[in-house]
Length: 202
Image: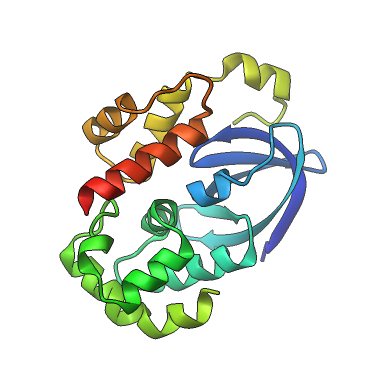
């Protein structure tokens, strides 16, 4: 079981990242909540992880703290909620907001999450109300310089991340178009787009 990794951040392509740990590149997927807290490429970072093994794939998920990982592990135990949707949920709202929406049975707020319909929202509320109350409180040899040169436009990175999180391409493109980029990073664009789409859905 891989529970924690300490290494150099060598790639950030939301929702995926790569961490160099002793010369070995670990590919991980993370929520935007974790991405907002990541240091710059080339700097060291400590990430808590969840390792999932399936017949056709071995996946590693990264979290900025134990609390977010605990919430992720609770979410994937809900019937119909897989890792991808769990990351979308964690990207769309803070842990405190999720706990509040579940405890207040706010179906409307939860259906603002990509891929979460009314039935799924109701299932989340039923299965998580008690549990959440307790839980809340690409290339190995790439260098930061090379990655910086091939980095795509912040809008393109943000749009790809939103699609990977479950939004439809048209929804992602429309949301990104409304965000003024200037010197904003892809993470900042994604955060603003998610905030606007969540407000619109509610």
